Length: 512
Image (tube, rainbow, N blue to C red; front, top):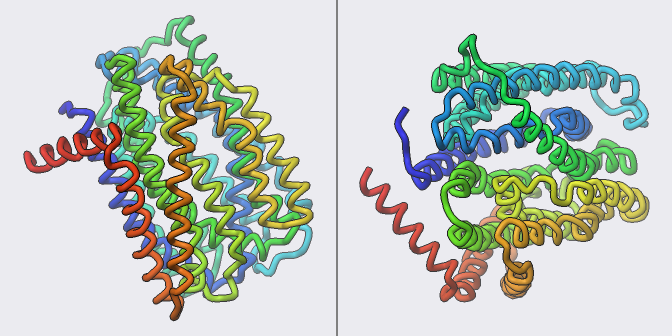
């Protein structure tokens, strides 16, 4: 198997992710627009609700994936085939058990759906049948996905991304045809099931072809000490999983409980726009993660910290830009794509942008926390984040509805991991003062507020149709934000690192 440099792997992962995601987003967006036109808002609500419920079932994974991927970095760097095969064997056995557990727990939850959906939704199909199909999609993935993690850990996520996006684009096209011909949600859902199955099988076979030794019959079990270390990491990651589910997967459930499926469906259009942007930007970091893991096991602390500072600036640049886009452009985009009836008050994109920015700014921190193996720090605090989110959501949701539930997420994170995780990475990962990070964070925030203020003043004079407003605002927001950021950071060491990276990338591309 041909070995590439970390920069080449990063470029391939990022390029495949961005191009594939861009195409997938365009097709998916068209599919969403047709979905809105062909089916009622309650179907959007059902879609969002079941996604949240089944995401909570992924708690059964308990962080095994992240722990095993971390354990794979070193043997992959050393080409230790025996160790890799042993890890994958352990991973596969665990995931088969998890898949069965998810299916069992999911079926046990079916009788309680009527407690969440208190009024009969305007849909034709049985709510229980729709839930069962969604459950199959979730549970079946566990029987295949463990092999894709090996490809990702080997810095070849571009392969997984390419297959995923090709299958998903074909799936979306078939769903568009089914919606236009039949206006039937069940047909839409069954096509999704077929797409999930095909994607899992194809990626699994590619993993076996690239790493044939994982299928050997004489694979030895891991030594007891190594299994103990992995399960120790799994235990620590379990708290992160619980926290993530309590924070990220409860909003739609609570919105449905307080305001009904229709409001959940309307809000989900904004959520889809934000998640689309978040996923696109996160691709940059997903493409880097395995390379950072490899960098950490081969380079010293000074080199690691230099790379962290660079990534933190890039993190701010792209998520700050995106946050201002959400605040000033999302309402016009929703009106353009789904109609004026789906537009919500300005406070909704504002609080969504706040969540988007605060979480996005943690990407570099979380990448290093996981690739440095700092799982055990703050594991109990993560549970506090989830509990606080639910308490604040109930209290604020009663008075302020969707806005209160979204604001609760920001408050819960701000009181816990938004300050603690950077502290851990700085102190225990790089052995440096956390104040270095805090000062840079505050400076970045001031720069973002300046860019936002300029956008707010300029956009007061923008008028016209939804299409005209959307185009003008997107262009102006991009120009203003990037000009302000460029002036603010042009003389920094991190920007010098960016110029060096750009030079290296250009050299690689020209060599090709």
